[in-house]
Image (tube, rainbow, N blue to C red; front, side):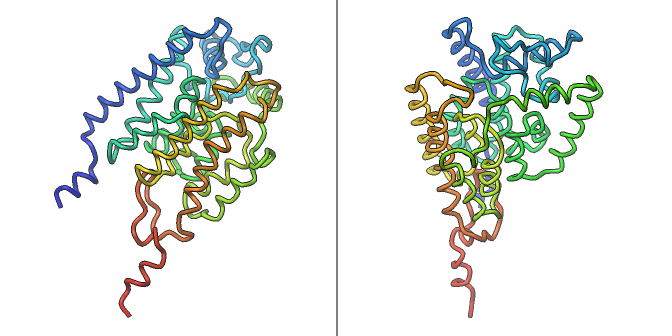
Length: 337
């Protein structure tokens, strides 16, 4: 019984925090080194947010601070994202990129180890490395699945936050999002119009309008499970066709083997992405969507469809289904006549 209790309690909190900090430092160093080796013209997805946050801090228009061109697109994030990024605007951009991903990785690592160490496998998948290289929000959003208070941040990128909220509805996400929204209007009342105009020009398309994207709607066959609802919602929201969008889906794994499969698929996707020519056109090209679908979305869908139609319980992410839930007929066979 003592061994079972310790397994349920998970690793000591202090040790988890130490490992999370070390992994956060490693992630920050990786991002800094990655961009040090890029050309001076290389930009990350975080650059526009940092530029807008720096402008807002100085009293300027954050949506007018992101020139397009040379930046490919205007600022496509709502003002709450700029408010969250304000602390990083005090750092030079080359340091801010690494700091943002270091904090995000540390929080994700801390959440992953609440029950055991093996969920850290998630950080080794290609999905995570693409997120680091792009300086994306998805690790922080995935951390919100594991650390409830962070779900308030899902409002800063609604297209990614909505599928997560559909999977893991939480009043903290609603209340926190409303507070962030109110703060944005308090700081700059006229931000909504420029943001909507920029979002209207975005080239992203919903998966259902892409080749094979309708398959994600099969997640509705498992709508009682968070992963089923998440997959179905992903079919309906416009997102970029890049592998980092599949990072939160790695939380559909229920054991070490499933997580290893998802990480391996993501790593193959990372290798395939590296072999592709630079993205061309506003839609980034069909090849990158194919990588996301085959290496990120479909493996998670297959695992989800293997779940029972009517699970007896709703375990937390990365936790195994009870024996009765894995086999719906088990309970009836075991019940006395």
